[in-house]
Length: 114
Length: 114
Image 1 (tube, each protein chain N blue to C red):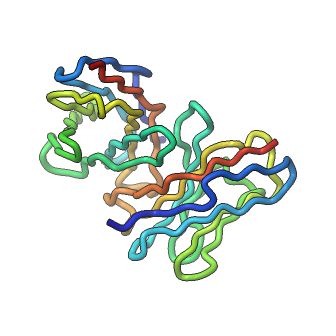
Image 2 (tube, rainbow over the protein chains, first blue to last red):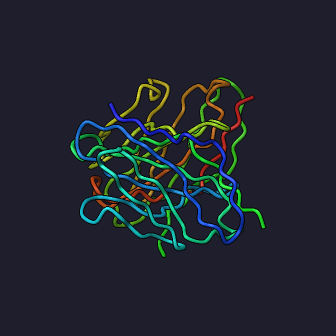
């Protein structure tokens, strides 16, 4: 069975500080991992993904994420937060050997304080 | 940049009525999906569609639900007899070929069942 955990419902960070949004996953095979962002009354926007290769992946808007196989984690990071980064962030996983649908975490609301 | 579109943006219906939610996936994509997000909860997979047939479906996708690709561009989700608990945001998504490819989401249709 596949699952994703986002242990923090809410993350607050000051503008200009680094941010981390945590995600851990569980899959049977090798994972395909994704981060999406949702702004109010909008759909989900793709940020970045890990498929294979380098454990550090870079994505849109200066975000990056680090895949850690031993800890089954895929934390989202950004070196310097912007107020405009405030949104709902979802981690999602897909099993490389299984169905194509995504399993989502419960989401983490990021608030960047000016 | 191509995008997934959905209509209507908001649908209000009475319990027991049929609704059809419409989506136009990105034109060269081959896999299509429906997800839903009940207010304040995580995004849940409903169904995937490939090569004109259902590829996978979740336990949520019962006999009240059906999907169709009536022509070369539209992808629809029908709920035959709506229930109060069907009230949610419904997202359509598409991707190039499943597997490692990221899914692109539409802006969603907010369904309110009264």
